[in-house]
Length: 236
Image (cartoon, rainbow, N blue to C red):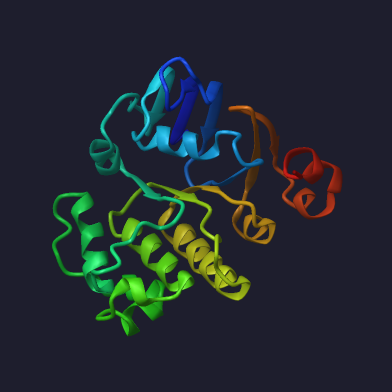
């Protein structure tokens, strides 16, 4: 398993836990989708994995190493890339300058954006000199994903990558990411409400309720066909 989480407890305020006794295992090369209503702890889990929120109990192991309590910087260097909800690109920087920031994640990557980055998302080459903040939401998402991929992660974590993006662009991003992951053995964990994207990418789906993972689905067709399942975990 590339990621193993055991009995994790974490939250934003001391004494008030969002995640409670959470367990999760992800195999190398898997695409895992994390689903659930708002407020169930999905983003808290993502931020706990990448070191932005410290665990109050339990453990997080990545590639066999205990990363519980490690800094975000060390976790990124260990091989975990993170694309947060809202993308968090540098709007005043050009596309190329944003991409070069991704090369800082590991030593030895240099300062020149490799051509393969533009092969994955060709629009980035076309817009490389444009201020990132002037691009569309879909283009900004491609930029955020590629910035993370340039750090050559073994695990990529995506939080709501389809948010605010038109469906055709979401599909294109999903196809490009799937092809890249298959070619490089990348493991992907994504929080997502778009069931079409989850069906395109996912090998497994996990449902969260009240800070814990309560159900796992391996038959991804159920996400499209089982209305009772969707109503149970996603309906407001």
